[in-house]
Image 1: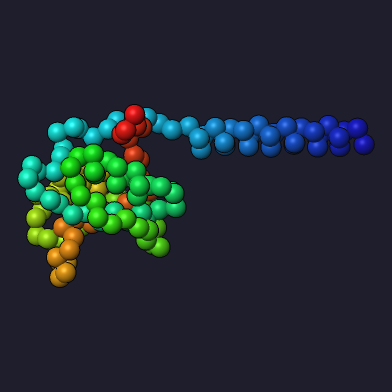
Image 2 (image 1 turned 90 degrees about the horizontal axis):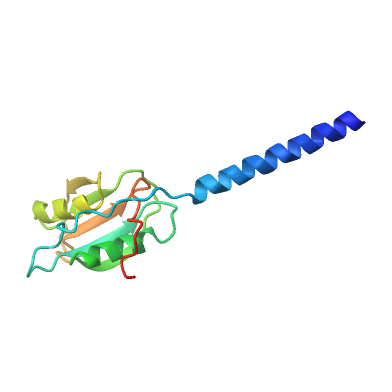
Length: 141
């Protein structure tokens, strides 16, 4: 009977230690260096961008919007996508691959694809993947 209590107490202690370690791993953020400040929208050009969050990370589209607006891009629409993805994709919707390439540079390892938007309302769309991490320093201190 005494041995069973010791085993139960030991298991409870192991579970508590494991849970604490898991919480620390999930809340510990590796600092992410912000993209180069030279990556900006061209002067005198309005580039309309749509940002879609394709992850389960709440607020990721908002953080991407802040980054893009800070760099001179005009984010006109944000939202979520039901399909989860790992890799961020930047869609060139207006046949300006250099604009899409600038946006992709802000998101690190983002892939660029060309797709026509017949409405001509958007120039670039960003579909955020779970591998993108927003810069760790605040945009507006």
